[in-house]
Image 1 (cartoon, rainbow, N blue to C red):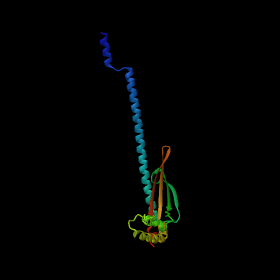
Image 2: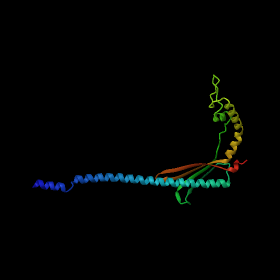
Image 3: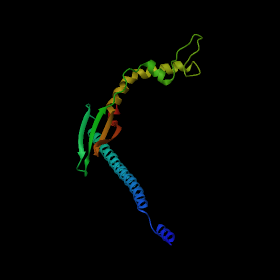
Image 4: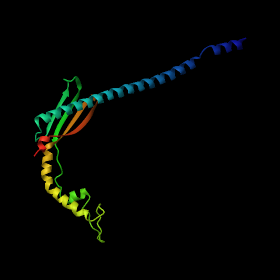
Length: 195
């Protein structure tokens, strides 16, 4: 009779050890799930901030483009800092710089000829090592490069007056670290190109 009673008790419930083991497994799995959820919320928050920062950078670029179109380009580099508090985004700040584009100064007929694929050197057998198959194309390219190099200084000055590089860096604090998005655009002033 005692063996049948013991059998009934064992099949009717859990021992203390089984309950503690189940609670330990449940606790570990819940802590993993909570950590996973925390990382997911943090990633969603970062994604939201990144999207807002890109939108604000584009907004600033459009404002700068309109201002440059209305006022024209200045001959000096411009730098500006500010925030987006008026737009409702207190956390975000920006740094803006507008610079003149500088083109290379050491452009001559030889360098232009090599860029165009002509003007290669000859080896001891007299054959040309240029990219072109026929030797008659190389002098034409060399002449064209020489003509371009004479006009390059004038073209260079006009392009440098007509093109500006605009850099916008939007920053915000996320946790303890600063985050940022940087956008670079090149704008032209067609009025400067008209000669």
